Image (cartoon, rainbow, N blue to C red; front, side, top):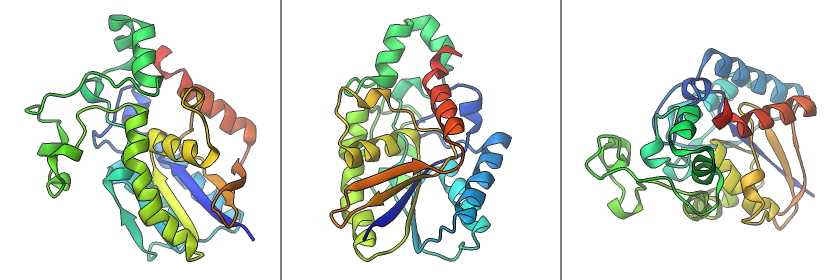
Length: 248
């Protein structure tokens, strides 16, 4: 017997559209992102997916995506568990900057290292920077030492996995049908764990916006199969577009 788990990166955000580093900045969805989200809901409905519980980050683009998908499935009433550990990777002082312009200023190699290396974080925000999460009311109850000023993917893996083990796994063990709405890097961290992807290989993984990724898990919650819903070629092209963002 297998258990299905659905992962969904939010629809295209306004800053995805503008090719800017977003991180923990709380931007909304673009018009295309709204359309992607509605299409994701239709893909799930057409294949007969239903959910008992959903997990989501604290960022608007993830919350809106989940809301629209559940609305399309007539499941707005199911429990939604929100947690900062599912937030996007914190891009530090790069947040808000255009990716292409940043590459022109610092060099494509350096920006690629900040974006895609496993263990090299971007320059951090100063603690007195208004954009530092310590100044955001949604994180006021958290200990200051857990709030990032910058993160590499290794940091995201470290802070995301406790939530996987403590919150999502118990739902799966209870045979609940689980949907996770999150972000490119928090989902990369989870996919790395599920698929056992090495530190060296994970920088090459790109997760497209707004396309549900379905895992079939065995009794040990290890993957036996995974696939994107809809047209596989469309998912491949969307992932390639993510990889090229710093060049566009």
